Image 1 (tube, rainbow, N blue to C red):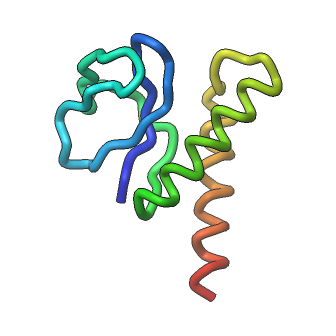
Image 2 (image 1 turned 30 degrees about the horizontal axis):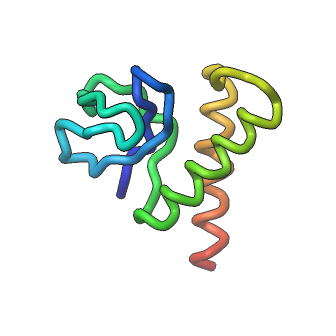
Length: 89
């Protein structure tokens, strides 16, 4: 399981292991406190996390928005859960 988070410095999405306390941003070099960073999604593996990050960044770039609101984050989580359940069945 990996948490998809966002760098507070440059707003780049990244992912961390849930037991990881710190993450160095690969874009701006900021040290991210993973325990304080808001979790956008919880991905099953690093491949899913990479794919989700690409989709999140593409959506924000295409719409010209800065971030997701709480309702959208909740919807993202439920849609990802539905995708994972569909893979299992």
